[in-house]
Every structure is written in C-alpha cells, then in structure tokens.
Length: 310
Image (tube, rainbow, N blue to C red; front, side, top):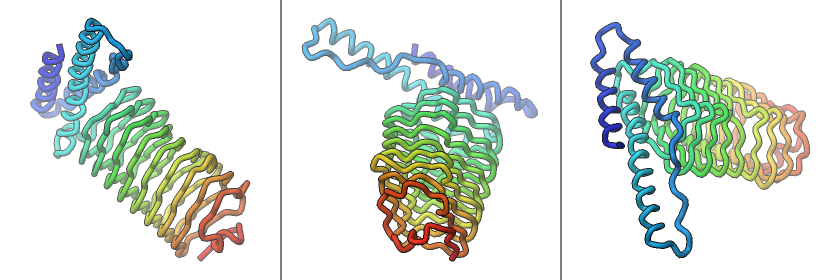
C-alpha cells in the first residue's frame, strides 16, 4: 500500500539521520535504497477512456488513476526527502546518488547541494510535469545525464551553480523546455547533447573558465537562447554541431571575453543571431564552418568567415 511505503521512506530517512558517528556507510546505504526505489519500473498513467465508456470501464479507469496517483506520491516523496536533506549541511552531502534509468514526472530538488560524490541520471527519463533544480549546487561533483531523455517535461536549472568537476548533459532534449537562466558554470567541464524541437534557455548564464562542449550537437528545430550569456575565459566548442530544420540559436547581447570559441559547424538552415554580441579579447573561429545557408543576423561579423580576434 502507498501509505505503508510512505511511512517506510520517512523511517529510512530518519535511520540515516540518526546513524552513529563514523557510520557513513549506513547513510549511503539508505540513499542507495531510496534511489533504487526510483529506478524500479512502475505502471504508467492509464490511457484516456474511450469515447463512450461503460460504467464498468469508468470505475476501472478511476481505480487505476487513483492507484497511479498514490504511487506517484511515494516517488515524489522520495525526491522531496532527498532534496530536503541536501538543502541543509547534513551528512547526505558528498554521497553518491544513482538515478540511472529512473523516470521523473515531477520532483523538487530546489536548492539541493551535491558536494563531491557522483550523481548519475544516465538514461533517466524526464516525461511531463516539472522537475525543479532551481538554485541547486553541484560543487566538484561528477554529474552525468548522458543518454537521459527530456520529452515534454519542464526542467528548471535556473540559478544552478556547477563549480569544478565534470558535468555531462549528453542527453536528448526532445520537445522539452529546459531552463538554465542565470546558471553559473565555473571551472567545470560541461558537455551537451542533442536539442530536437526543444526550447533551452541559457539567458544570463555565466561560463567562467569553463570548457563547454556542444561538439556534434544537433540543433534540429530547436530554440536555444544564449541571450546576455557571458563566456569569460575557458573554451566553448561547437565543432561538428549542426543547425538545421528551422532551429534558432540566439546570442543576442552575449559577451565573449577571453578564451576561445569555435563555430566549426554545419549551418544548414535555421537562424543564428549575434545582434549586439561582444567579442573582447576572444579568439572566435568560423574557419571551417560549412553549408552556410542559415540566416545570420549581424552579417558584418560573419563576413570574413575566418578567425576573428577582437
């Protein structure tokens, strides 16, 4: 029963909180059990009723909806319990979290602090609902979203800070809305995957001394905003990326100060907007860009199609 599972979640959390000094293995064990619960397969939401359902079909559908909602509440409670502990300087920080293949149809990790350790979202599926990482902190952690699938969900990393460590967003963003507004990537190595019909917003994001890879990233019918983003030092790499199928990448008002920016990509359709973008002491490379059939705003910037250094 869902109520029994909810009681078990809270009992496990308190077991970790009350673990004797020096028994960090007990804290990790509880975290492993809770993460394993999220990784378990579960019955998805029932399909809509047919056009003219019978009373028996209505009753069965209602029971299935209630059962699904009950067990979804257990899953969301697990996420909330983890988030609550990570918002405070508890023993839950610095541990490993394995959400490999888990399904997220909502959840609150606002302000969670993952300090060190390994955080795996490999192959996780973000489907519907809102998953909130607003203001989360990833300090020196290995964060892996490789192979994750963002489909129809809203995932919010606004104001999140990725400091040091390695962050792999080699995920597939398919029709999702993902916010990185005012996020800060400092001295981290960050890799992004495929944007397919998604809306991804880096407005006001700061990349400070970071190595950011959009290598072989496909912008297919996606809208990606780097409006007023700041790239300070470090390296930004779009080598092998492809913009096509009406995709839009917006660097309006972006600042590239120092460091290196490589746009050796395929621009086959879509739109690139560099209106009021500033390049100060940066090395910007379009030398091997191919199929320049995309609409480029600020064509004066693109006229040379060689290394631009300002």
